[in-house]
Length: 348
Image (tube, rainbow, N blue to C red; front, top):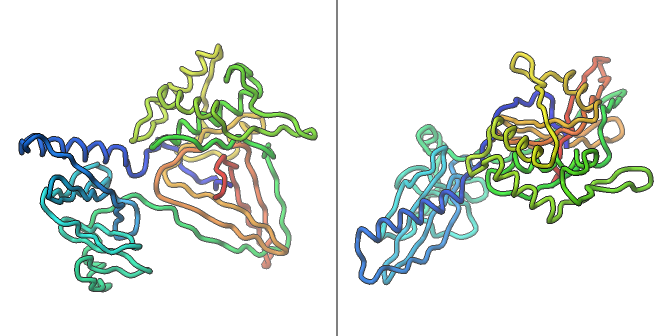
């Protein structure tokens, strides 16, 4: 997959922090039950249901719990802050319909989405467009989901200019919530271990097949490396900043007997594509932090390309392995040039 060269580089954060939501539920329930001083304590059994906002982005969790002969529910969301919005120790789960998306609008307003339409959960009444627009501004908003689109580019003539675009790159994906930066670090270290062989002790990251070097698929060694980097970088559900990434990577590399330095491909707050090309032509990789992610898969056909996009406003981090320029001569003889970084994300 390719990244357009317009990606902005900043720190990256996680999406909905489900681990933190679980911990908040446990601590809240414990506090309530201790306060109520239930006789002999209360054994709580809970089931979880995912909640979405009115844009159908992930928002949080509804806990449908029971203790003794009573039922209750709690709603905990992550709209930037993880918080309990509702909890009832005696109350019925407001969501009952199966095989739909439960939409949490605000306190006391429970909807569901089915086949593109919205309905009130208790009555099944369809939500009109006017009501939807009216509550949109005050409704809770969650995490931006991945969206998809395609563009057809018809051309008379087409050329590709690759800049150290490798036929095989590391594609490790194992990690934890908020852990895209340690995963990025793992792919960087696997890549450089081919040259600096003690970066991952007693490990060969790949082998030559018919004259071409092929990186191994991820395995127990690379997974353990990600766990180590997670600790070195201090990554949690909130993600990892650029300075934490640099400090953690430097700490790991120093333990292996090497040194590392970092340089920027930014100029006046924007990505400098020429700098990026210079770096990848030196067989170096790019650590790319993005505020808003857009990936492109290029499908070439006779006389036209299909550009398959996936994008989100959420932050992300990937490794850039090489650059690619695609130049089109269009039907009106105008020239269009698209510039990309090749990243380590495998299309799913």
